Image (cartoon, rainbow, N blue to C red; front, top):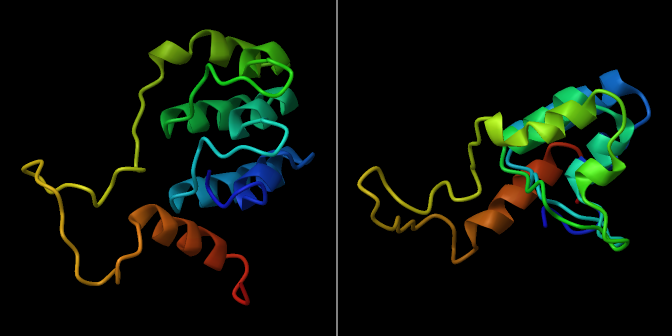
Length: 140
């Protein structure tokens, strides 16, 4: 999960104003927010965007590595809850180019593990989460 059930991405994707949801979500995704973040009810970021019919955000989530086959607590996939123009995007999800930044900084260009001396033992995933939250909540 990105920052747990309180992931800013989950709130952004579920915003009823598409323009606001898009601006916030794109910013978070471009700053290492986990595209597979989930709420306590099992709904993933992709479930939320699909249910709102946000086809552009569904495509962006898939492009950034969101799993399309995850099930929520009711056993439903994002396609099961999708509305509007998000449906065809999910139906053709396999044709969307995928990139994943979750593993960045884990290996160098030669594929060898990267050893960093500036993380003080913190996992990169935790550092990415902090960076994402820090853009919105300086106090936290």
